[in-house]
Length: 494
Image (cartoon, rainbow, N blue to C red; front, side, top):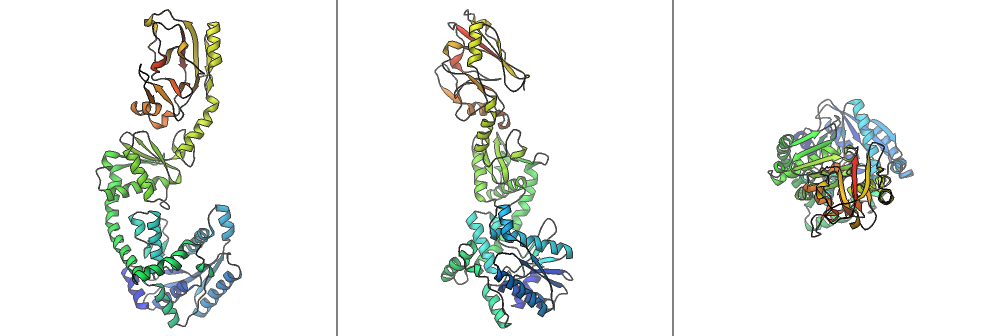
């Protein structure tokens, strides 16, 4: 057992000479074995061992007894020992996470704090079954190739904190046999039998079934993960070079973009990784980003320009013609920070409801008095001017101005309003009465998605009469036999 761990540590450069190894010891079989093995390895390498025990405040008297066990064990072995008490239930309530996740977060915070103080590595007691559990979880979550590589013997964080796993090459049965040979007792956490926890379901239910199929199933899972790690190392080099070449990252706006034509030239495996990196770069983290999110980006790429989708951590991905753009919601002009694109648009529509103006009274006043009426949209600098008059049939008088249009008032049946876009908006685009969705118009005219919610529309319910600054409906155009005309002019704004 000791020789096997020693060879594994040498092959993977796990333990560095003269360093301090901070061992997380809970009192369970795995961590007690880790501590004993580290002390034996001190005979080969000159390094220091410090023990940290985190008391989570979850299991009452049992948890306190475990802490006392670790303290006594360290005293017997002559190892420096630190105990840190944390309040997991309170943290879980405050941060909206489960107690299992809260315990992991606080435990790692303690480990990292002590490791930084002494400049050492953090030793964790994960073994082959733990690694197999992680790999299966990654499969179930739809993680990519990197997730399928499982735990690594050494993990160096960007902040310099170094995690090591000396027992990753041994099984749980190896650990139990070793402790028995040493006549070493350990603590048993009764919550490990509770199958309401996902990992316990794997340990108590799934793994025994796998062992019935093949007694070496766990070992084979670990071996496959090791091979995938080698493949990943090669892909990582290739993906890094291509990512830097085809992607453009705007740090000021937390936005990243790539030419879709360039992306489509890539091998599917590299393309997947580049898309994953794009999403991770904008999100600022990798956790909970899985294959389904990459599939959603593929669907977006294959769809029409102007479409967008919601992704984890407030990231919005959109397609603008031949460009894929990913950015944080808070960096998108006019886009509120909400959980989905649909709710963002719905809330935006509700937010602008006060800006919508019913024009019935204004038009009625114009028809009655013959005077021009102003309808203010946002402030005194942005408004509509409306006037009504009888038409003499001279088609040459119809203005050709972008922001002044004439409409046949007698054809308008129902209330008119000026507002921004809503789902279901359409306009009549020919004399036969054929309609086109407003969304299609914006796409065909190459109107950027970020601008569409700020364009004013003259509407009758869902029917668009005038896209202000753009085309008008064929249905309400002035003809020679038109009688009453309303002229609408837009002033101010952008």
